[in-house]
Image 1 (tube, rainbow, N blue to C red):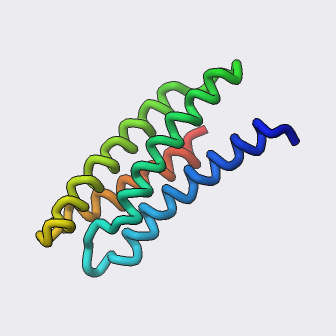
Image 2: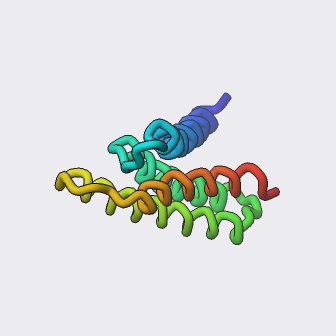
Length: 119
């Protein structure tokens, strides 16, 4: 296995772990919704690794599905923005609105479903 293949696999793994942090944090706090630090870091990781993977796909000479990747990127940005707003409220000691907390986890789950079900 080439070293670039290993690097690609590590980035994919980080992308998956980031998505798991978002959705896992949502499930863990479902009854008392909030936005956790792991969800915020997961949203940042998901966007950054997603952009890297998109660039990698473009450089690889393949023909990535631009519509699918654009939708995933948009959802990822929405998750990041919601997580950022939720963390700011939480850090100030304010109550995180239930809808905002569920938006982070729910949109994270939607992003996973788009990635896995759209062929």
